[in-house]
Image (cartoon, rainbow, N blue to C red; front, top):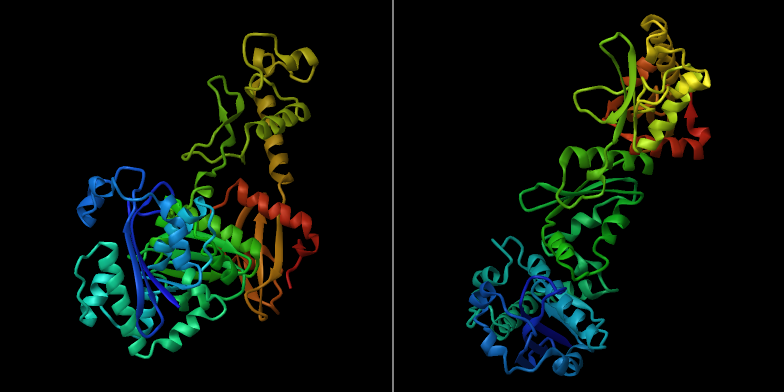
Length: 458
């Protein structure tokens, strides 16, 4: 049994909107058996643009039953049938949500006549209800009303059956086919074509623009998980409606997928990515010479036009490192801006500052210790290579950290032996980096020390 459904609503997503009209046609695959149609009092004002589109006004629904009153009836009509609609996830999300609010759990198998039409009538100019019906010679009196659109969907469904679509329908219903949960514009073949390998995936809109970038240990499973629930909020529904295609890039490891995702989000700035967009190293350690000739170390928020000695996510990290350098190299806390105000220099009082802040030490000797501190800091920054599996058996992957910074990553033949960093770099792609990316690499290296290479690579 098929329940062919159409609804009208106050808006485009189930959360914070409501149904204004429902039409359900029960069909046995040969003919229509019976139908149910009613206006619904939504409990909210119908926006004017919706009134203009559907012709359903606040006055028309004022005396209609509420959904609470209709829920037992609607549930009885739907509970044992295959739920059929044009863009099925839209209608299903509203009815599932509002039935749930009334204590009914709808768990129907679904059929989307958009997807059915694409399979049975390939090459049509468009698969919107109006356009596919026009293409097939189906008229739609009372357009944008639940009854009129449901009747058009019935005729379309019958055309699909007459064109040999029964086998397609059986395939789509077999084992709760995941295709029914996909975004309406996304070809199922693109999901099926994704490998079960680590990598980065890209969702594209109608114009091909990347709107979301994600990383995955298993590309097919991760992308499928985006569509495994049908959340009713505006953000999720708009996101799904805007996905028209998927592309991907395989990486050798999950770590490389994490790193490439960071790079690609910064490069493409996709509209639906949020968290990693906000991440930037917040602070840098800088050096400059003041008017008296003294080298000054200072922690500042990152400056695009200046290259820091080192960067920090948190100010406290930088302060702890700077205090350590001050103590080890007898630097002045006032000249390093750790101590502020007019009080006596803590370093002089405690015996490690030699009086540069009071001009008791000449700039030359003080600056030499600043240079020594910077040199020691840079030397302490690690340089190593992380070697791991490649994208296939004939290659290996490589991530290079040079003086504490990510230089780049790439792939080289599995049997290659490399003796110096210059040769290695010819196989790598340089990438911008940040504290978050470095943190991922350091954590991975600490967890898997056997993957760290410091000598010849091979």
